[in-house]
Length: 431
Image 1 (cartoon, rainbow, N blue to C red):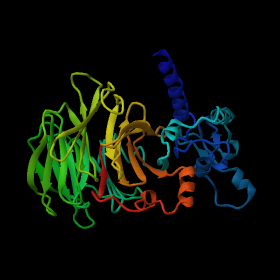
Image 2 (cartoon, rainbow, N blue to C red):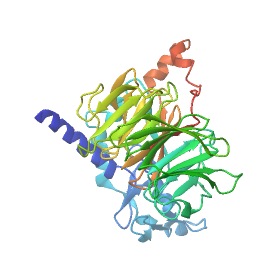
Image 3 (cartoon, one colour):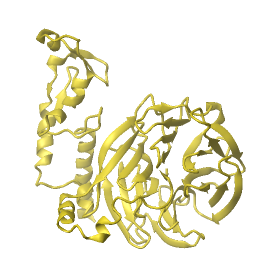
Image 4 (cartoon, rainbow, N blue to C red):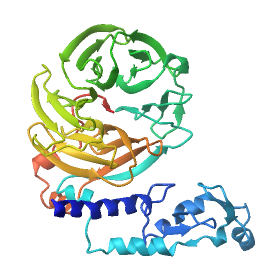
């Protein structure tokens, strides 16, 4: 027991150092001693960013002489203090720390080590930030266009963005009180939002390129929380946290009216986050156990509501125990269930229904993940409430796996499905 605890402490300390000290807080890239653009640079005020961001933050004059280049001013993004760019220099203590950890026995990061022979998500881009997002809670991504929908606090409770992060017109702010989650249905034609402010489900319909308009409101829930879209059709799953229910709603397309509401499962313990597998139709629900504060339980049902698997925080189910801080769930195109741990800032994979496992796939670059989406086989989008952003991770195969495919081009199980989109929902979503 003591040895296990002692092993966790150094790993946790190293992760805290890498996340809080060895990462540029502007671009969220890790500092590097080998890449000139990623070397830690100390600003005149004392804060540190990477060289690339320091250059981007400088206000260079439009002149070609050397004197003007030297006089370029650099404004710190954190304290807003300005100083000459010429005073920015390598941050030697951080540089030495980078080299020390990089050479500490050649130990790979836990995410890379846990990835085995599979895919390893790497941070590709970051969007949003303070001023664009405020305390985000739910996320939906359109698989066709890449458009992003986020529910949050502030003046725009439902924020809409293009693939590249440019904001789109959102609905009237007075139509939402306290949204908890969002989903897309009908191939992206309908936007669904659970609103805890009036215990309702609200369906918005797109009208050309204008603002989404409220098409339908369904009330009478206890506390509607999680949403998951089933396919390009109008089927949506909803969890009622107060009543312990998992419901299936069938919507009319394209109008957005409710055709049918039916119960999939009852007597759940505080169901919140929900995800639907695009391959087998299994439903994965995270229960927040009121009798044991801080405990979570992952329950998996088939399309008829029959329990297939249950994992909890005590390690009683297959795959071992679950972290107490589960804050989001999603299912990728291969049927793997992904969980976000809001306490440790990590994303875990707990395997499929047929093969349970537990491995960390992302353990860097996140502060407090609250929603996950898998719009494509090689893409994971994480909504991070810690810095009010959404972050795009893309997977790459290890070099050994890539070399193996080159040597064996006829390996059908590896190559025949690699470029094919899975049949199922156009939306990768969950919170």
